[in-house]
Image 1 (cartoon, rainbow, N blue to C red):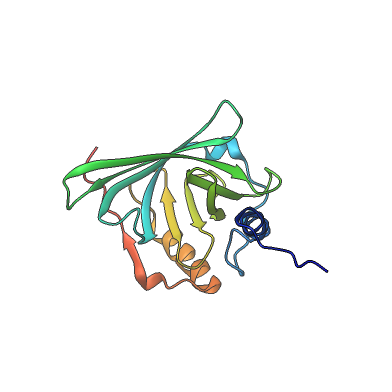
Image 2 (cartoon, rainbow, N blue to C red; image 1 turned 90 degrees about the vertical axis):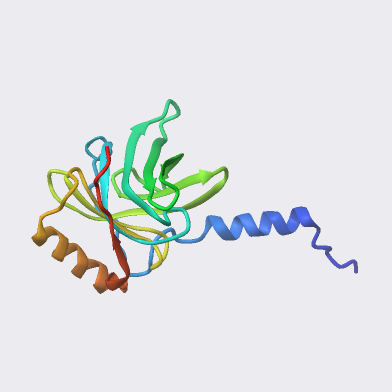
Length: 178
């Protein structure tokens, strides 16, 4: 009997199948439902985040969401690098993992590679949002304004802590430039 050789193509397919079955959110996080995509579109200010390499040294960070021609969501991120004294920006796309009624999305800035984007708390007017990434390494507090009321902030911190986030590690963004 011949043994099956694991060629690079077969290994690649196995890897892709493994990624397609992965969850795009932390175990204890639940994406909100119902979710209204149209209400979420537009500009958001980043109030706080868990820092990671693509946002390192950024302040005045914003995210703007709109609809692409193919129905995916265009993601335009912008921030001011305080060490380089220059604006940085990136454009990506987001897709719903399942039903558009559930705020569980995957976002890509690098071709076929996606990461989780899950709205886990939002107010009824869609002015403030708490967003979980695919693991406990990624968390954002967003607002339509450059600030957030303290009661909303405290509530979002409690939600994040119950999920397992280390909220003491959050970076609190400053919005001083236009």
